[in-house]
Length: 236
Ligand code: GTP
Ligand code: MG
Image 1 (cartoon, rainbow, N blue to C red):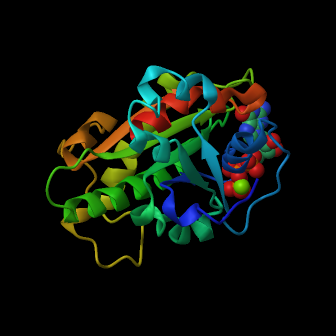
Image 2 (cartoon, rainbow, N blue to C red):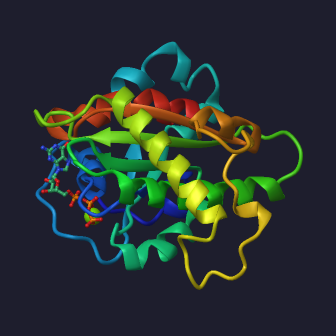
């Protein structure tokens, strides 16, 4: 169901991640529960979703207790293309978004490209957060380790370790100017996290106003739809 009528008023979560990770499939599974075979995305689109009934009926999200929660039970999912050349455009949606779901393919033998993209995403959010003043709950980022149904998929804990190790490498390479040739405006702000040099961990981002969760799941049998209700609920 694609609706634009109320779209502007609803908080929007941005789907980012490399080509083929399953962003469009994940978004589609929130529409009608049937993940569609999708084609490579070239233009972003969005749809309206809600927190699944099993969660929205629990007291935590019950709208009659607090009418303001009723407004927040619905949100937008904004899909983006994962192709390398379209990532800068995808990143431009971060400031207007309520949070990011970064989708990776858990069965992918090489997470180097995913880590480089995730690094760029986190640097963008860090810069955004640095400009904000006052009380700040932290920008929510969910790393959705997708395709857990495949037998070659690694568990989310392992994906998390690999991504942290890969981001450590990206961060070092960028600071030495090895990656990103042509980016002359290399400045201090591009260093990701507060943890200094050494191993990168997602926990280091809390001081930078970014809260990262890592969860494994699948679009099959409505997996994410049931699994992410709580995360969306907490992040709204
Ligand atoms: P781009 O638009 O190119 O950036 O890719 P995308 O991230 O939107 O990936 P898409 O949703 O098109 O999914 C790519 C392929 O992976 C499709 O064939 C999906 O059916 C498949 N896929 C997505 N999620 C899952 C999953 O959880 N399990 C399995 N087995 N396949 C999945
Ligand atoms: Mg897509």
